[in-house]
Length: 555
Ligand code: NA7
Image (cartoon, rainbow, N blue to C red):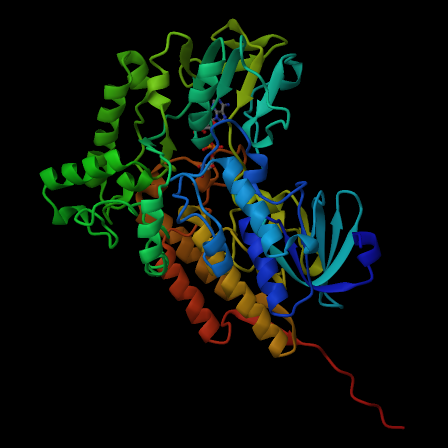
């Protein structure tokens, strides 16, 4: 049945997005007896892992942690092949889960939601897709992915470029061939850092445009062996419980020798400088972003933070032979960990190649595009292909891009024009019956997002069961509760070194976006505790409405 046919039908729940969060939500709702429909813009499931198909795309959280934990079937039947999964494998995993748990039949693919309007009289949401299909549902659960609205660099005359122009998050299905080509890459976040070494191998010449250097840890990816799996299966259930008690929702030290495994973070001050250096060395060699967060005070203690930053800079200077390029690549002027640590392979070593140039656009900005390439420092640089690894309008952008209207026609985008206001990152005052997975004010991208998603799915599912069991037709975040939570989220920014850096975490990568923290920085355990408290207190902070029933009128 397509949406038009369904227009008369009212679903209990409509879910926006069929990535990690959306698929799980759909499965959970269906198991609880709700009628449910999912809308997905892509032609298949995968979410971020459907769209970000650029060469080298890979998760920066270990596969054994970055996956579902709710299904024994999945645990039994799926095997990850590498320590850090490549995009293709995660996409295959999500497609397989979609089929194996029979989720697919309830998802409408190629269905990009453009409008969601709340009907206050009927206590229902009305939806419309890009192709004009209409749906109605009591509850609206958004899971669009916090990194789903790509942004282009603000460089004039982009449309004039006659070569191939590609955004990493809109990678063409026909794999581009870089052999014999002059390629430019703009951006050195996670996407650029993963892509650059691979393009350098293929292209005739590569020019990298760098603006803010990131701290990049070594991935040290490797195949997972039978021994790894045997060891993992012994501790899996215990570790998953532990993940929920860890600030980042994952350990990153699954295979670290026990003597160093630091599952309960301790402050750096409990160790001598020599001990800390030894710990850095162990984690650097082990690989992954964990080296940046092995002590609990790295984001609050400036001296400790600088010690770790210095450790990273020394590693960059060791890897990059040309001292000028090495200094260009050394992050300065912001604390380590306040922009997402990038996890890379051969990134720094790529700049030792003769056919790779590095241009610092802070010193020599890209002035504009031309038919043949880019004007930089008054000179034209010619390219066959320009790749923009310029990132996303993170977290809020996935929702503000839509026409979402709550009570009295209030537009969500306007509500958040001075920064997002949410209750627990789950609900928004004025937008009854709308619940968010990965909403602003939740820990989402500040944690292992696969683990956080499960927490959000469980909480929202319980909330909807509670509403349904009690005959509530509306559930809405109260204004006071929302503002109190928003203050908590904003104050956490001020209490940490996060306030000292520009990044997509605070929205400064999007011109005109209000500087405001988009994620809850208190860590996963504190967030879970807050969510549990609200639920245990009959969803305190959410106002509920029972359907009015007319009294029989006597003759
Ligand atoms: P990011 O991390 O937002 O990186 C975007 C990069 O693009 C970053 O280096 C930007 O520099 C750069 N950029 C943007 N505009 C320009 C212009 N005009 N000139 C030069 N450089 C520019 O996005 P990613 O896709 O790499 O990663 C997003 C997340 O996905 C990542 O954190 C992981 O969670 C997975 P800037 O830093 O703004 O100076």
